[in-house]
Image (tube, rainbow, N blue to C red; front, side, top):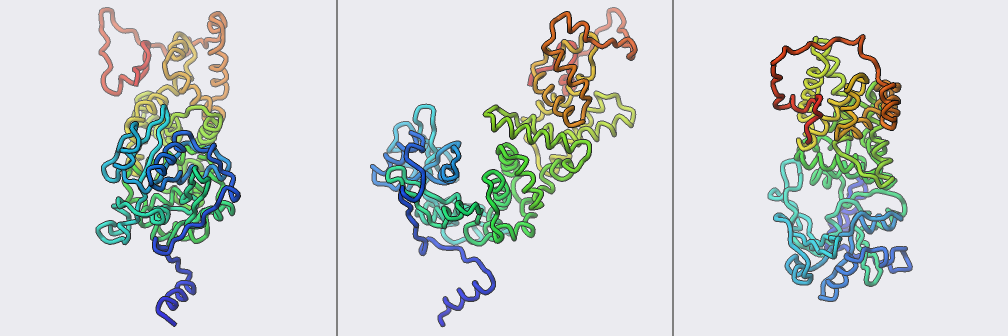
Length: 464
């Protein structure tokens, strides 16, 4: 028995998974009679890009998520092309194109309003991983080497993402049995899952997102190392981690994604909501309602605001902090300012939310107490606020989840569409409320500065 045969026997005996190499990878080519994708399903620009590159003597395929989605009967968001041509050769083929990127160059080919991203086939780790290309945990630091089509297929994460479609011949090229796994509704990692998760821990989050989004079952061998290796997510740069979390929450399947995350125990430390809020009897129903509302809007083709969803996910933390500061004797608005800061600071200790979302989130939170004020001119001023609709949707969602007074939400729903006379009759008398202190004649109010300027007053809130 040869050494190779002994190694194969040991690997099989102990369940070890050997990653295939580019040397022994051969594609299974499925002709048009073996699948239902037709060239008309490919966007005009992607089709033209493949045709022109092939005419110039290069291999060119539509690749990745677009092929996967078409096989599942879904409409792809975009079409990416992989080719044997170098970026300079692609640029020379298309007049309306530009090379972008520093670490690994890709080409954007422009056809009217459509842009197709064209990448050259890539190899995995300059073909052999070493200390120069990985950190001490095995995380991949460099993956910028051109390669063959087989190498490009094997460096991808899951088998269902490694399918190539030739729109000229209408063929699917499959190096890793991706078509078989897709038909079996199975999500399988290419190569050894532990090694692949160490190379890029974000793949664990991607597994959860794809399984939830596509209705796939995570293969047992692909799932097994996650529990042991989930701590590696702590080594991923926060900006990249946040980007992946945002993809997950805005996937159109956020509720299912969160369920899978919790099932895999990947939610700890990413968002306070995903740690505790869904189990919180007060904030949990509102958080879940916000996720459902986001899914419904995306399904209806409506726009969604990441800041709105993030504000909803962190509202439970803000609300608890608000009660804490009010119990210490702070008035509501100053207490709300303190609560917002503490919630955002605590979040930044685990997964920083980019500050570009802060102004919108704070404004939504600051407007919530104003929906309880229904006397005098305050309802009219709130109605004229540029973010009224988003803030009202936030309040109405809270009310529907028993997190705010349902009667107040219903009042505002009527007040928006009421006639001027009816609005006057709807106003709640505030005679029983606390009287405001009058300013002395000739006294001048000091203008608000800094974050106090975010607090809406009789002149309305400042714009973002």
